Amino acid sequence: MTATRSHLKDLDYSVVQQCMHCGLCLPTCPTYDATKLERNSPRGRIALMRAIADDRMEVTPSFGEEMYFCLGCLACMTACPAGVNYAELFEHARAEVESKGVLNNPTRGVIRKATLSWLFMDHGRLQMVGKAMQVWQQTGLQDVLRKSGVTKLLPKRLRELEAMTPTVQPRFSDELIDPVTPPTGEKRYRVALLTGCAQDLLFSDVNRDTAEVLARNGCEVFTPHNQSCCGSLHAHNGEWDLACDLARRNLDQFPPHQFDAIITNAGGCGSHLKHYHKLLKDDPRYADAAHNWDSKVKDIHEWLAAIGIAEPKPANQPAQTVTYHESCHLCHGQKISSQPRQLLRRIPGLRLVELPEASWCCGSAGIYNLTQPEMAGQLLERKVNHILTTGAATVATGNPGCLLQVQNGLRDRGVGIRVVHPITLLAEAYRRD
Image 1 (spheres, rainbow, N blue to C red):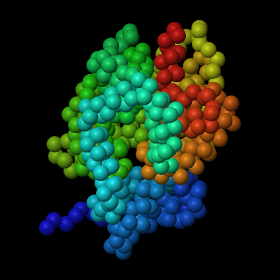
Image 2 (cartoon, rainbow, N blue to C red):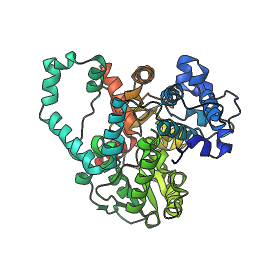
Image 3 (spheres, one colour):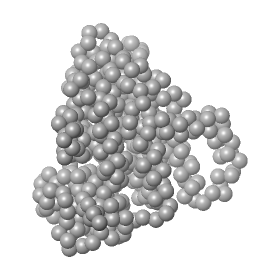
Image 4 (cartoon, rainbow, N blue to C red):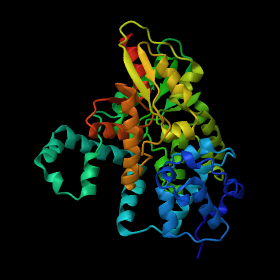
């Protein structure tokens, strides 16, 4: 009988032992800040991981619950003076939890099979579910159900989940963006645009805006239909093999040697997309292409800052006050912080107001707001309170999870502040030209 793989024991031990236990990460960790418990801190979690790697502790349900209580916001990586790769430790720790099955139960198993193993492994299935939600929402059935009061009969958690149901876009990326978008004017670059999975259903308009902005700045944009999920949802939830399968699919669909850059506009996806070589380094067929891929993947803000953008003409541009919330994986995972602000400041008439604790997690964290609603709710309340102090009419943020989370938080407070991707604001300014 083949032994179950141990992700933490098989991991390069230098990664496991790198933490100096200095504690400089503690003030940056949202869960430690809330509980003041050592086990809820990066340092405490790494100590648990190392105990397993050293065979001093077994993988237990308590260990699994702790790994899933972590947001994975990676703020600790920004604070760490030793450069500890917490992202790698975090993913392998969750993979260890799943391989040992210590959190398994029938309900959890069905949900993970239906979502991670079935829905998010096939773009057609995802769009099928999206189209069903379109019918539900656009025919008014959702509003009728809510106004009827039937939802009040649901258990509290189901009522909360129903209220969080996002609005599906009327058209998906394949309907909005041609497979090839020619540049406006002289061609300077050939780039590929990743349209994502949840991004495609909920923010296909952001994908369209991204293609337009790239074309406006001299890029020929390759946007094939029927794209696959990037695999970040799977890697962050312990499904290592599924994440590897999705990485291979993307490498087949977007051979990196054919492009000057491979563009992503979702902070959480981009943080994962830049580490395909880590997933496939032992795959003789894909390892070299994955290494090249990692060097070609660029966040849209990062790419535009590198190539320079055509500044929108000042005529017809309205005055607007905007604040910027940093996506954790864009800021801490990809180290992209100044570029979105630079882009926003290039828009005529736009006044950028700094958001207090701009890089503090909003509580979305992938699906954290679904699995850990209490902690996510605390973080969202803190974020909304800070937004309200800015006096801004618009919040810009570069990740679909953050967009949804902040939208829901402001809506629940009865506040009509717009929440958009920075690229949408730039695309709107170009259209006014």
